[in-house]
Image 1 (cartoon, rainbow, N blue to C red):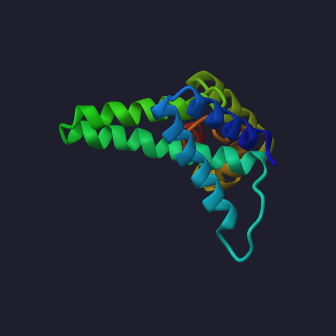
Image 2 (spheres, rainbow, N blue to C red; image 1 turned 135 degrees about the vertical axis):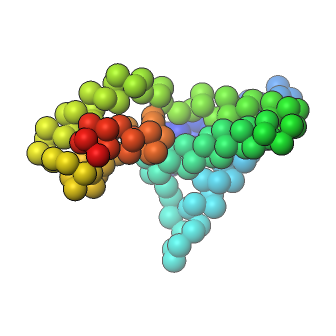
Length: 151
């Protein structure tokens, strides 16, 4: 079992004992998402660490999008709940990259791939994604790659 999944289970047990309703429900939701991902496809399988991290990243992104949607709809109480859930999930994710760090990673990957112009975007994205997985939203990465390639 992936260490992150073990940590989620241990923290869920701890949150249940502490009667922390927000943390308990958020961790249950996260573990349910991991389990759903494990049984998706032709055959059930155990997710490895990067796959569990990807599931948590996806769930955290859903929460951030929900916060925006609830705020736009004038529902601050629901936005606050989603924000609290996003913060719980963020504690399991690696620290996000700063704009400067992302810029350096993209520059290194452009140099390594020898890509030039907008046509090289796919090659650069393929090189950058594994290095920044779970630390930066894909749209932000794509924008930075596009910017550095001059497209």
